[in-house]
Every structure is written in structure tokens, then in C-alpha cells.
Image (tube, rainbow, N blue to C red):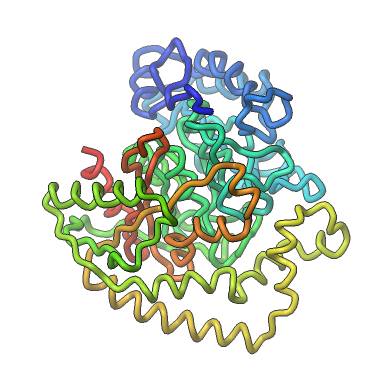
Length: 459
């Protein structure tokens, strides 16, 4: 069932919610309260609990009409030039705290209502952005598909018979459906990249520690990143400029400064025999087109051995890092296990059997893989892969949830284990209209150089 939804919302005041579009409109007299009034009925159509069978199940909770209008009216009196994200509406994944709205992590029994915003949310609000509400996700951010939520299956923005990607499903949909200019997700295994690819968005998986995770429900605390979904690479960069920065209260925060600009020229690509498309010939063809586009833009492509990256990826769920997910929900598992979805319990419960010896063995394995991967990455400026090798229907995913979800992480699961920066970009569409995406990645701290590459890619 192909839907007709596009990235442009049905707004009369502006043609779309691109940040530059709104900034131009505000400079010419548009008020944030006018925009919010226009958005409110559109937001309500995508509430998880509104009973509409056509809903994509975007919002778990939202600020009410009066609260949103009061936020917007407070901005009406200010000068748009004084705030870099003046009046820009954004959505927040519901494992990131927003004061006054419950944080559920897609588990009602886990729900609590924070009294202060997550560090990154507060920074964005201070810059003039307007928080709309909390978005649907795979429960406890465990999944790459968007079907693992008691608040409803998150449906793809282009074809509702297909998965939206996860776990940051609702955050990607809020932007793709024209409800928000940008959104915050999280990315531990690919949750900020796979939904971007499946909904034709830009997805930043920042360097670990660049964006604070204070006020974020941990999935794997040592690996978690707050990610950004946006319509364009320029929008994504504008948000990252505000969202990034050291947070003393986050022990995993890093003082990463913007490096000197260095043009990315040489790009590694996995050997053909190491690429997996799981029978999706259209995605395979689109990846070849992406490589051809780079060559036409005078980039130099070099084949690399991708085996160490693949081996590292296997450690994320087959190794002891699954114990971090167990740690985050251990109390609920012991007291109210039936409140956790069976598929999540199936993934997490085996972590109770992991030994210290197993853990240290995996640490040693990862150190060896990282040495090998770093040496390969040092021979190029960045590496290009598909973001995902294929996309599945909702029925396919629900029929074989563990294997198909694992397939979705083939190109993503290693990224945070190896401490790299990554950027997911749209790269064409299959004949049936479903989007394909690619990911460029580089060493930690190279986020801005990846964005510069993205700007050139988009031309």
C-alpha cells in the first residue's frame, strides 16, 4: 500500500519545514505562534493512541495545544537574529528526557516524568527550538526496525506496508512526514542511520561523546550516541553546531573540537564479495550508482578488506555488550518481566549468563579488530557502505524478527564499538519508490568533514 505522504507538510504559511525556509520566513515577519497553530492538527493525526488506522504511530506523547502556543508566543517577542534555531520545531525520541512529558522508552511500566530536560534538549531550547513531543521507538532502543513498541508499529513514511527502521522510528517519521524540522534519536547499533535510510533523510551518528547523553535512558551506556535526523546536510550541521559540546555531568562526554577543514578525496569501499544485499538487486544497483556518482565527482575509490569491521559488528549482540542492555532494565526484568516485550526479553535475558572471563576475552578481540580497522581507515579519508542491505515489509519483519533485524545491522553494528563518526545520506530509490541510503564514516572527531562531504554529495 503505497502512501502519498511526502516530506512536505500541508502547511499554507511555508512550503516545508527546512530550517533555512523557516529562517527566511521568520526574517520576513512569520511568527512562531502562527507556525505552531498550523502544525497542531497535523501533529494530532500521528498520535500513537488516536485510533486512526492510517496513523504511522509517531508520537507517544506531545505538549498540549496551550503549552506549545505559549512556548511559541514567548518567541514571538524576540528577534529571530538573536537565536540560531529561532522557532524551529523538533521532536525527541522517548528515551530522552523532556521536562513535563513522561519518558517511557516504549515501556509503560518503566515510565517516569522528569523535572528537567536532557542536556542536549536544553541546549536546543536555549537556541530557540520548540520541542513538540516524544516519539515512538523500539522498546528500550533494542531493534533496528520500528515494530517493537506497545504504542504501535511505526510505518514507513513512503510505503506503510514497510518498516520505518528503528529504534528511532518515530523521530525519523516526524521529519519525513513534515511534522518537525529535525529530531533527536539515539544510535547504539544503527538506530540513527537505518531509519534515515528508509525515510530518505540525513542521519548524523556523531562521534561518541560529542553530544551529551545526560538525561538519556541507557541502552549500552558506553556506546550510546544522541543522533540527529534532518532534511538536508546543511540542516543537520546547523543542529549539530548547537547540540554538540562537552557536558561535565556526562562521564562519557568528550572535549571534541572542530578540526581544521580537510577535504575528503579518497574513499574506501568494501570488496564486492563482502557486500551483502540479502537478495535485493535494486539496492545493489543503487550502491553501484552511488559509487559511480562519487567517481564522476572526482573522488578516488579504493577497495578495502571489510572483514575486520564485520567481525567487530558481531560482538555487539553476540558479545558481552548485551549485558549493558540487561543492566539498564534489570530491575524491571526481575520485578515485572511481562511488561517487557517477549522479543526484547529474548535478546536481553541471556546476558545474565555472561562471565567476566567472557567479557575480557571480547575486550581483547575488540582491541585487535580496532587496530586492524584503524589501520585500514588510515589509508583513506572515509569509507562508504550501504546503510542497510535491504528493507523489509512489516509482515516479513514480524515473521522473522531476530534474523531480519540482524541483517539490518550488517553495516552499522560496528560503528560505536570502533568509535567512529558516521553520516547517513539518501542515495536514490528502488523502482517501487522505496529509498536507499549510504553511510560515510571516518575517525572520531571528523563529523564536520563528513558533513562537508555530504554538502558536495548533495549537489
